[in-house]
Figure 1 (cartoon, one colour):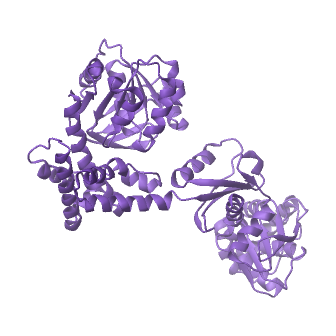
Figure 2: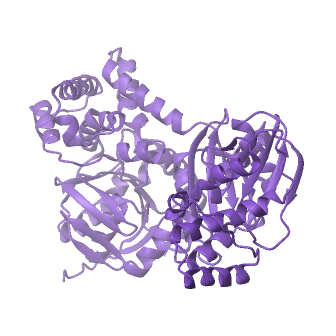
Figure 3: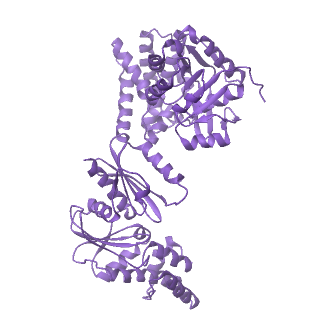
Length: 569
């Protein structure tokens, strides 16, 4: 166990990503008082419970007792230094929030990729209380509290922007060096050389990886993209020298050799593109383009990469609408763009107590898309505070009408009910009817009867197709229906006939409802998604062509998202 230094430095670290967690683990180990802050509640809860774990290149397990969920909570701690280790895309937001709790004494240090980040901090806190750090390790999150440190190319660098920050810079360097995270101190001019060198390395490859969706090794294994990497480096060096940045002799070749050895590492920009969030392109290639224009230097490769990344971001960062169908058995999510086109759908079990899965799904959607409006529907629509609430009838009609803009009859078989909806070409409900006998003929009915018959839900349709039988379950009551099934099993009725008998009982139930057969009939709902053989049986029963809506389980959620879009308009 490393003996802790007698160093009273009190540090707040904003951002529990690979950089922030690696710094936190080393500073805690060396004896500093560290408060880790992140808005991801699940991550902070896990870190508080299980500590911070570093694996691969650096291996550590460190307890982290002091944590908080917002920058405002940092005000409770008399901190000497706050280290900002979040994406540069959120830097201004963090600076604004920190300014509100600033006591006029704490120092602020930017520990991020990118050019000129420290100038943004210095505008708020002054150069006298601003430091810059260049990080030369990288990694990815294995899980909420574990960083896979893929490489460390020492040293890191720390610099104060003014003489008043020298003692803080020395304290940080001493603490990190004590636990073998080698860190050198330099002055404000020297740190710019390291900032630009690191930025040139990131700009050379990160954008190309993000555009091509390839790892660093894959891009550096293809001669034509290696030529592009080399060209980006050459452009960037030319701009840097005009800015009086001292580029070491041999930097160009050393950079290419270094990037060639990068391995199958996904740079953070690629991960951002995959997650649909804004990248740091403007602080890397974008800054090189900006400085190039300042000196009248053409930077077509950096400009091209910047433009293509912005195009990717625009695709993900446009205006989107979310429909959530909180059904009795499953919760369905549908995201549409501003033209009503479906761009994402997903489903999770509806959980009455554990809300974590629901929150996780919302978090993922919000990371991928800029959601403008949310409409909720289904049995649980009142449990979530969206922008709009609509009944399943209205949403089913809107969703199906987006694909079938005609006068039609919709049969929506759900977990707890059957809805018959007469829908106009404009998606408005003309008339409707709902079954009134508990869960007879619904998804719950099928699940319980199939379980008693020892039938796998996923196999029922295929099994039923093999049967030429016509027996049906006479009772619509689940209890009595289970007794009938037990009798069938006792009499050795074939399993495929039992499967078809369950379906025929549902068809009989629907036949008793006011289905309009003179207009197109469209099936939707979770039951038809898992039991498509019902379409064939219903077509035979009504002697008309019965259609299944695409992605039938998501039709109600789709309708909700479309209504959210119309509500915004």
